[in-house]
Amino acid sequence: MQVIAFDLFRDEEFLTAHPEVAFVDDINEIYKNADIISLHLPHTSKTERLINTDVIFHKLERCPIIINTSRGMLIDVDAIIEGLEKEKIRGYLTDVLAKEPIEQNDRLKGIANVIITPHVGSRTYQSVVRQGSMAVMNLLELLG
Image 1 (cartoon, rainbow, N blue to C red):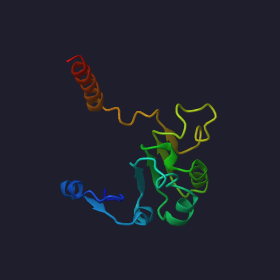
Image 2: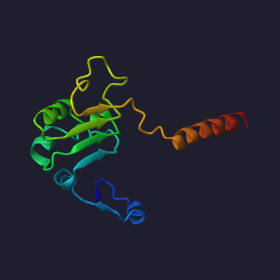
Image 3: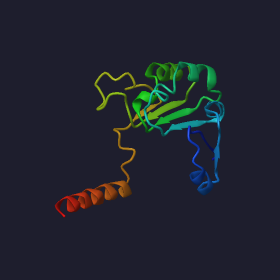
Image 4: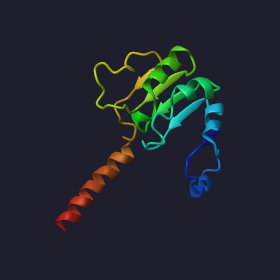
């Protein structure tokens, strides 16, 4: 797999440690060349609805799968649904929603090629151990 990445802030240390990652200076290179777009960024005024109608219908060239493990507000739900219906994107996989927990009538529920997980993407064995250890250390420090 060829990995291409974009970020507003170029992390030279990371890129040096991971020479297999090709960094691009323009997000449109991601839209043009990616078969899978995975979002890993905070929700800010600059990232809100980063994936929107304009991106899906005018900038994507490869009919990608979009993965969102960041924040639900990074995507425009209507654009995702329309993109799936018109086969501009192959799938939408998300661990986050704009409103959590998921509502009974969430528009993404039941749509073909959409997978929703319950905001547990970070729940690896290592992260759970780390969280537990930090909680104990914080308690000991407080009692200390």
